[in-house]
Image 1 (cartoon, rainbow, N blue to C red):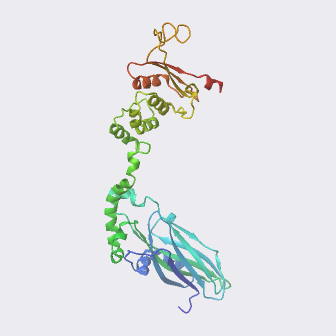
Image 2 (cartoon, one colour):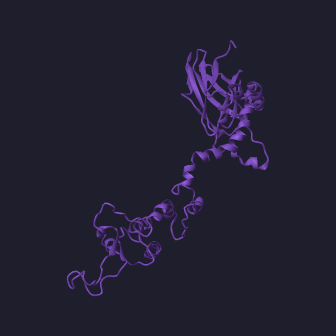
Image 3 (cartoon, rainbow, N blue to C red):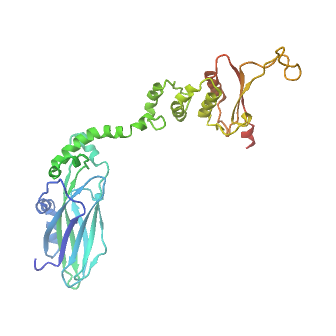
Length: 355
């Protein structure tokens, strides 16, 4: 220890709660035994092993370890930090402040760990293989002493524990949170029950036709006794199912017919326009009484033959081409009007053509 030039210290930025620690130096040394032998033969150096640390990683959350390097000698050191472990290299990224360390100074090297989000969905599980959760690695700090040219190595062990994040651990006493098996055991129940809990949290979205899954729309339509018509788009079906009760309430009236046509064609309701003839969905009723003896004067306020009783005219003014399907609009009118009423339908395309 008296000849030590570079001092290493590992600090995990996450507390390794609930992990049964292993002997870092023993397990990691077994892993890197062959690599160290090769390195000893290539370098005429001294080599020493420093204490390591444990790191718990919860995919896909990032985790960090800070490697603090301190130059105890009187010469400049040129550094090279690398990590060897039995896990994929893309899991770790090394960030350094520089590659030279002045005498009696310190430097922090950050090791960034991040595992893929689908780590626990590894295809190897389908073949009956067990998923490795504990990984062992060793940090090698190769440095060259300026002036003497001596190549030296300092190493430290690192245990990497991959664990799923468990919500249920916060419901048990702190004593049980320190046991790794308890956390992994509770995760089994969490994966079984949590999807149902999450569904209950957003149950309102499943019952709203605008946000419900498409496969649930037939159930919601049956709930309000609304027939599913394949001629409507999915978007229109959502609007119609949500407005079914209001359409039932105003069925057989001008307001109900205008609302239905609006939901299908997306033409404005123009509720703030007072003159009926100025609306995009114009529905005019023919109110002529015809020739009634004693009530009218011929040639002034009545004519022979009179008007058509229970007759109305629908005029649509589309805002863009192909906005109105005349055949479907006729189907809507036939469905919504009283059986004794007659009607006329006109689609004014002149506005679209003029644009």
